Structures are given as C-alpha cells and as structure tokens.
Length: 375
Image (cartoon, helix red, strand yellow):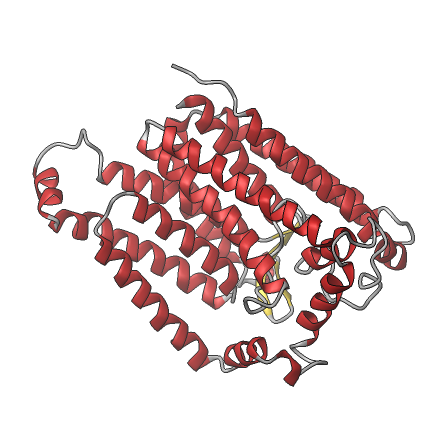
C-alpha cells in the first residue's frame, strides 16, 4: 500500500529554503557589489544551486528504493574514488584555507565529502539491512542470535567502513564533516538494535581518535582552549565567536529587521556561510532564532515518524541517517555560533551559501519523501 507524499515535510523544507534565499538576498548584496559589480551575483548562484538540488532531490524521490539499495555500494565507492582525486592537482584538486576538500572541473567547484554523507548512509543502510534481514537463512541467523554474528558480520564491517571514511577525511582534513557522518552512521547502527556495548566501544574509539588528532595537530587543542576562553584571542581565533555573540546580542528579542544587520558589513567572518545564524539573530532577534530551532526540531520529528513507519529496513535506516545528518549539522552550527561548541565551520542546512551542502540536503529530503510515500 502506497502512502501519500508527506506534505508537512515538503512544506517545511520549502519554507526553510525559500526564507534562506530571501535572507541571503539582503545579506549578500554588498559582497556581490564589491566583488562582482552587481548586488545579485551570490543570490543568483545560490538560486542556481537550489534548482540543481531540487532536480537531484526529485531524481532520488523517483528512484525505486530497491534500486538504490542495489546500487548503494557502487555510489559509495565511486564517492571514495572522487574523494581520493582531490589530492591530485592535475585532476582539479583545489586547496582553500589549508584544506584540500574541493574539486574544480569545467569551472564548477564542488566538495565530494558532502555527497559522502548520502552515499555512506545508503551503503550502511543496505549493509545492515542485508546482514540483519529476517529472511536470511542458515548459520548466520543462528550466530546472530548468539551475539557472535552481530560482532563478526555487522560490527566489524561497520568499524572498517567508519575507519576508511575517517582516514580519507582526516587527510583532507575535514573533521567537521567526519563528525556529522560518524554521528549519523552510529545513530543508524544503534537503531538496528545492535548490542549497546558496540556503541560504547565506538564511543571509546572516538574519544581515543580525538586525542590522537589533537596530539598530532596541536592547533586543534588551541581551538578548544580559545572556545573555553575566547577573550584570550579576541583578534585571533576568538574573533569570530566574539562577533557572533555581538550580532546575536544586539538583535534583542525581536531583531533589527530583515536587511538591517550591521555585523554583515565586514565585521563578522563567514557571514554567508558558517555565521549565518548570528546574522539571523541580529535581524530577527531571539524570537526568530527560537522559531528556526523549532523548525529544525519539527524536521527531526517528521523524519523520525517517517523512519518509524517504514516497513522496509533499508528505508528505515536510511531515514534515520538522513534525519540525524541534517538536524545534527544544524545543531552544531547553531551551538558553535552561540559559543556552546567550538567553531565547526559547518554550514547551516538549507540556509548557508554554498552548493555541495545544499544539493546534498535536498537529495536527503528527496529520499525522505520517497520513503514516506513508499512505506
């Protein structure tokens, strides 16, 4: 039995994307004028990426779920191959801000690690649903019942998957994206009713990995210390969080009004991307920020309901992964903007300027809508 399209989720996303574009129109006008001689350059580029995301999302909305499950390994390993290419300058590897995360092909620059969020979720959903299928025959089922199969046939492949993703993203480096992918995959793994001690082991491995990352790259420890005491470097690493708090604080309860931000005039770094929530706070106030947080909570609720209602395991795990991917990224962006988490460099879903993340998020929405009508 086919259910109707989830119009609540569709309406919510249309509102978020539409308001984000409207907000960006006023936010980006000065930068567009300074760099390109017209006030709409960034807006038109953003709208073009929204259009590309809608097309990509529509494709994943139409594709049969059993077909996506079948091709998920191919999509994942193709994505890994493209991620490896970013280290080869001859093929268009582009280095920004000391990180090698982008590919430039035919004048189009994109970030392959953003698409890994989707392909990794699809691949793990297929892996878990196959390994834990109720229709699987033979010794595997018996071993799963004893707990041994869970470890050998599920936990070990999952650990290898997470390890491969971690290595390639650490080399870029893109630790923030790695965190989003890891949390999304662990949420899927936990939802598969695997033993709790598996998740605890993953947590310990994660903590150990974090210490190693800090040990080999001391600047990460410096970022953590500045996060705890931003006043120690008000003109250095602590500058962005300081200006973000000024922007949000100056907005008061109701804000200065759309387009009336002062911080966007060169005071706040990355105003169109990482710090967009701060500008939102300045222009719409605490009320506007609260409404946006409630909208992302509504997204989580709708995604969760879609996952619960899904009868197919692949669809269920995919819905969980996508929901966590989008909402957890929003959570990290917002908390880092208001000083509750170290600066992550993550864009605000559906809002921030950029192509790869927006297309990825709209693909995720297309998949959620696909699952909602197919379950």
